[in-house]
Length: 291
Image (cartoon, rainbow, N blue to C red; front, side, top):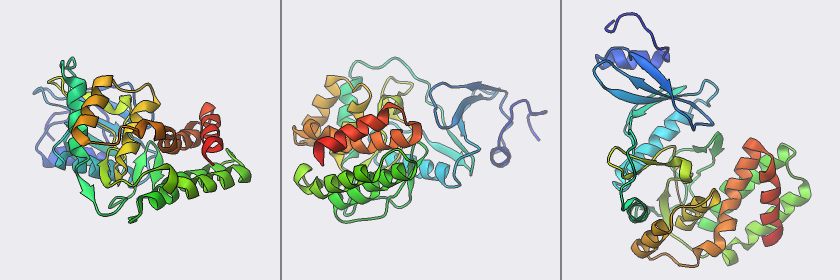
């Protein structure tokens, strides 16, 4: 095998892929900070080529395949910069390395404009061709024609029931969540099913080698664009120029922020399921407000 003795431990499927590509084994590996679900490393080769390797030996069989499919869908939208998928297996994903550069002066406005362009990719139904993962949580993406029913059944109630099974909420809380879901048509306006990143917080907004915005770690599905914007507000928010550019490019209802807590209840339930802690009380507070 080219490259001599292996110095970097790699998944067997990746070693086989490298052999098929006629590429030597990497000469070095460096861990990257930020991943709370998968172990992430930058692999480097002696010829200067680099790639990003994500590994998780506990990952469900379809998790990395789902991430790869989401990245391809986002790339096909030709909006924001998306890393190319090189290879994936049951326990790994190999991606194009986008070495970050300082943000360009128009970074945030460009990000808003291009996200609006991404959201022009639409579907007659809500959902996705396969189940995807928001963090380590498998998302039900069964196709549905009604957006309110999709958000209720495949997002809020699905996670609410899982939280109940884990003892994070009681039967009364679940009943209140069900009543909230019944109110969704009066709380949330009808919206087209748009291609969403699905987990768009600052940690998944990257910068490419030209200082332009890029997306990583998707949890893709076709859903409400207001829900995508709401997620950007959950952990600190993006710069004002992002929202101004998005609103101008998309023509979205400027009152979307008033509904952010309803959309973000899904992510609070997910974080309660994954991490418990204060997310449980935050989710409970939203349910109490809207049920």
